[in-house]
Length: 137
Image (cartoon, rainbow, N blue to C red; front, side, top):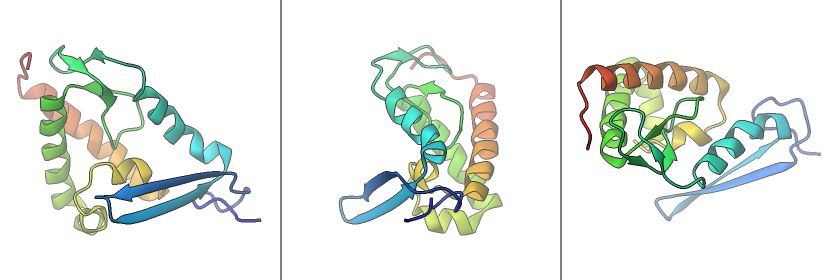
């Protein structure tokens, strides 16, 4: 019986496989409880157009890195990613190197400490994005 990668306690019954840039494959074996947030995020990406929470434009998927489901259009998502990676560079260069500047790493790393930091940094990035006077894209 393989144990969950994240909690290390329960049996891993759900398997994620993610390709990075079409080359590397990353696998994560999780218990149902630890996999639930990732499953919810994936389902949120299939819900069709939503309203961007920053400019009101059309958004199709939630922002990576934050635990809450927050939709953003492509231009706002790009600005968010830039702010997020600036914060990562300043606060956690070790994590920046691990992520290889792939914003989706923060949704699928399954490292509780990194997820906690990414959630806080993501909220800080959203606050900065809101404070930048983003207009409809």
